[in-house]
Each structure stands twice: as structure tokens, then as C-alpha cells.
Length: 521
Image (cartoon, rainbow, N blue to C red; front, side, top):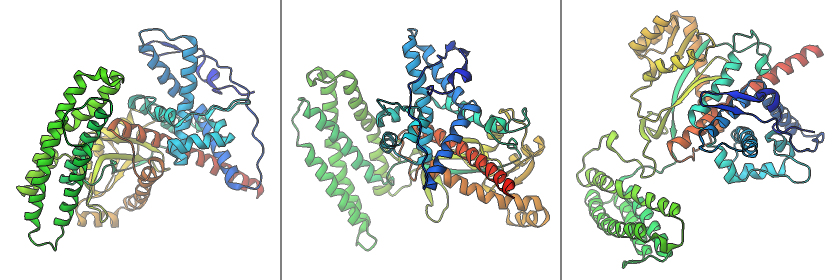
């Protein structure tokens, strides 16, 4: 018989005190689940089974699962009405499933729909996620999995990730018993780098923003008209057809070999602005009509508010979008990056100059990753604001790492983007080795020839570039599909947690393989 969730009783006890209230953890009696059959002849299955077993032990022994459920149960204390025992039990079970399914999703690189299907098909995955049973198997749907992704706010998720880091680097025990290793990992040399987490938007062309505004407003108007509220206007499809035709004309006029290309582009933009003026007028009329007579539509006020909010979001930015297109195309004047509208739907993204061969600039948020020599990510930050240079990260990152209580690092190694007199003085005052790559080529050449440790650290730093690519392309996905900064932040939190769990599980497997090899020898 399996207890669901397995070790809640001995991990949590009966109750745990928080700053807000005393949260009770119920010792849950789970359903009987069938024993997994022994599968032979498929090495990949055996490897995955061992990986999931290691992940299960890591979640329990490191205290990550206890921390996650404690933070989740603490959120119930803010409710006006005290939750019933049944509600506490249900929330506790869903908290454990949220943690395990989201870790599994990041490791398997699955979508919400695909993970729900895999859980329905695989008893092995259901056992890990603790949603197995004899007679009836109930797996989370894609919508439930999507809610699991936002189960905890960023501050609580950061505490969960730090809990795993502390367990892996804990100097108090003198060993890696909390994570199943012979020796705890060391907070020795830190390797820091930053990247751009690109938002899921198309390339921010000025006239494309105008097309997006027309499409969003016309879709909202079509929804209102479809629910019985109408005002005199041309069919919305005509406006969509007109703006699409002007977009194709703008592309044709932008060809380098077209005569009078600039003049034709200005002419097309003026026609676009006329269409946009009519669309804006109709949208404001329908917005007022929906707000005043929404009861006639037969839908709830909450759904009406969602439509109104979508229309308001576009209408508020429309004057600035028209001015931006006018300045750049007709006035031929540059617009500062701080004033640019890159997307009507993602206001918290920035222009990040990377200088790469494949992308001179990227559009998204800056992501900082700091790892130690074994590859464990000990600090990360997704910046909501625009960051002027990588050097701004160093002081805050070192402060967060020191607050973990795992000792002080030996030094810091970065690329030349982090170099600066302020950071050099900071490392010197803290007694840390300066592995910052100098900006001046002559100074870099001197240090590479005279300092062997510096040369080795710069060589090791190449692995950090690969680490960033793994986090972005494997655990987050080839493209971050999350909408809104909070959702992108949650996706980064889950990716870092899954990466560190998977890394520790692989280290456990490597230790077992070495012991078996020594025993065989």
C-alpha cells in the first residue's frame, strides 16, 4: 500500500508554524496503487525509472517537497474563512502533484497537453506524480497542469529552489547525505553569465503593431456583435481585409530595388492611419455599448470585464503606436529604446543588444545565471527592468549567495561584460579571487600568460555558456511561450529547480556507477 503523498507524515509532522499562522499538515491515507512490473529489454526505460526514483528521493530528503507544501498551505491562512479538513487535504494533495508534475514537465520537455497524455498512458510517471490507483486513475488535465505552473508566487518558489541549493551545499553535515551524495558540493569558484530570455512576439516592426491593433479590436467587436449588441458599421472582416492588403503593400514598397521606396512606404502608412482612425472610433463606441448594456449579452460580468480589458489595453497604447510609426517612417527620426512599444501585449520586455552574429538585438528580459564548478546553479535572476550592462548584477548576486548560509565562495569568473573598477574593488574587499575577464585585450593577454588559475577559470567558463543553452533550450523550451512577466518568471523558477534536481540525480548515478566498477575490479 502506498501513502499519497508518500512521506508527508514524517517530513512535516502534524503542524508547522509560519509567520502568518499555524498550518496543519494532515497525515494522508492514500489509495492502493498497483506495483510496477519489472521491465526488461529496454535500457532507456530502466534509466528513466532510476532517474525518477532518484528525483523522488531528492524531493523528500532535501526538504524541497516539505518547503513547497508548507508555502502552499500558508497561502490558505490568508482566507477569511478557515478551510475545512477536507479542503486542507485536497490542497495538500494538489500541492504535491503540482511540484512533481511541473518538475517532470521541465525534464521531459513536454507541453501541458502532452504531459497529461503521458500521465494517462504511463504507470511509471503516475507513480512519480502520486496520482495512481487501482480501479480509477485520475490524472491532471492540461488546464490543471497550467494552474499548477502558477501554484506559488516567485518569492515562495525562490525559497524552494534555495532550499535545494542549501541541501546540496550544506557545510554543517560535512557530507551530501541530504541529497544522497558521499560529499556535499562545494561553493568554490562561481561562474556567472547573462543571456536574453526572448519573449514570444514577432519582430517589432512599427506598421505590424498597427495591424495587431486592428486585429485585436476587430475580434473584440465581432465578439460583441455576436452576442447581440450592434451599432452601424462595415463588417469587421472588411477592416481586416483592408489592413492585410496594406501590410502586403508595405512589404512590397520596402524592397530595396523599388523606385521611390520611402515615398511609397509613407503613402501606405497614411492609408493605414486612416483605417486605424475608423477602427478606433468603432472600438470606442462598442466598448461603451458593451459596458452599459452587457446584461443583454447573456454572459457573466467577469467575461465582459476580460473583453473590456483587452480593448482598453489596445486603445490606451494606440496613440503612442501611431506616433511611433509616424516618427520612424514619415518623419524618419529615431525613437529611443526606452520609449519604444515592442508589443501591445508584452509591456515588460526590452531591447537587449547582444551583438551576436545570429541576432544583433533581442527582445525580452535579461536572465542571469550563476553556477559553481559542478554545474549547480546557485543564483539566478530574471530582470523585469532594463539593465544597463551586466556589471550591475555582481553585487546583488553575491549578496544573495552569501545569504544562503553555505559559506563564502572562493572567487568569481565572468566574461568581459562584467568587468569594471567597481566590481574589481568589490571582489578585493570581499577577499574573493578576481576571475573577471578584462575588457582591454592587452590586460587579458597578460593575465592569460602570467596567471595559470585565471587561464583555467576562463577555459572552464565555456561550460557556463553551454549551461545557459541547456536551461533555455531544454528546460524552458526552444521558445518561451509564457505570456506576461510573472508567467515567464514562473517558467524560469521551474526550469532552475528541475535542472538542479536532474543534475544531483545524475551525480548520484555517477557515484553508484563508480562504486559498481570498483567492486567489479
